[in-house]
Length: 132
Image (cartoon, rainbow, N blue to C red):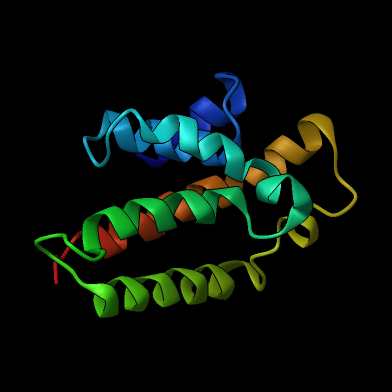
């Protein structure tokens, strides 16, 4: 999944959040309708806040572990959400798009952020390995 997401991000015209969702669709982890929703999370929700790749895996995690799902409930979904943030922080110190991409633009920014797209995919695969 990671390689697909990075390819979509670097060469497919997809944003960080869209590329993660697109790769997840390819893997059967979510429905294709989520791609449109992911657009709003690009570039830290166009405000520089939370990294779009993190937002994408939060959406997929919620789909798998959230209320009404056979594997989850409100508590398990929130537990997974906290894990996602903490694991990303272990790898990158912060979750803020503005900080992660500070001073970068164009291809330099894309190359930098491709690491975060990859990290997000690794974290998602980690939490989906074992259903609650």
